[in-house]
Length: 85
Image 1 (cartoon, one colour):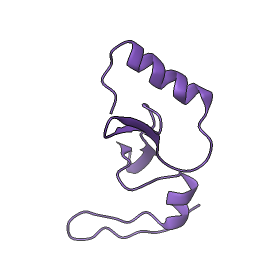
Image 2 (tube, one colour):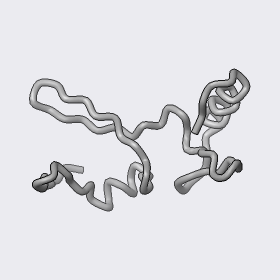
Image 3 (tube, helix red, strand yellow):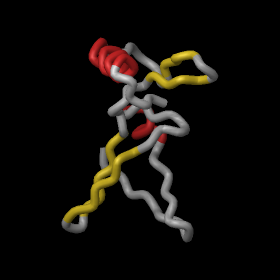
Image 4 (tube, helix red, strand yellow):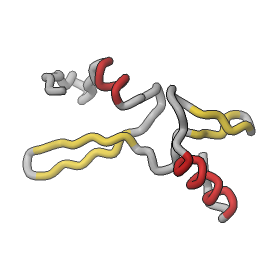
């Protein structure tokens, strides 16, 4: 998808709904930004998977199935004592 978006006075921009839906972005999700040679690339930060701890309970954010690799990464991080939020 190619589109034009506008940056406001505070430096904010809105990602079109179609892009948010395609990338399964939810409020509170983070994006990695890379600036190189006049280009800006945004990628969803998916390193920790879509599972988050909410009031002590692991819940899945977003829609659609969870890949086994995502749950395996999360379980490995928990077992190794890594900080997972």
